[in-house]
Image (cartoon, rainbow, N blue to C red; front, side, top):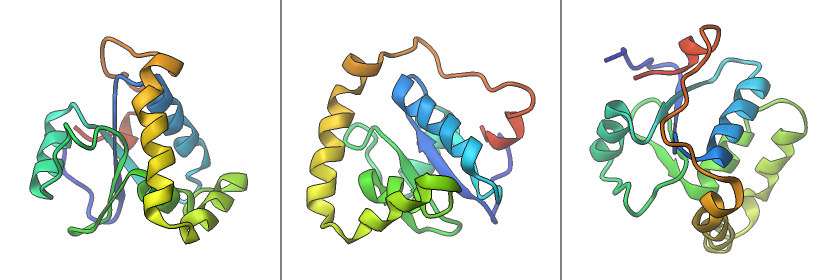
Length: 138
């Protein structure tokens, strides 16, 4: 198992979801300050990190952002907290944090519920290219 970097934010994502994999690619492209590391929810590390925080991945099966220490964010709050650290137009998405979380999560849950139908699903977690491998922890 890789060492968990203490100075990086960790994004747990659904490794078989095409929408989630595309989001990870966008995050990598716009993470100009090298803030994030990634692990799939299906990996042993993803399962361990979720369990340590009492997150039931059968209930929350989409993106989770873990800050160093024990802070974590789920669903729309995770996505918008991630956006705060990105370059370009993606950073503007963080301004939607003012919208009540319940309303944001209602939209997020609707998209999450339909993501496989709309965007497809892979049989296995993605395997990063050698250049990107250092961004992923197992």
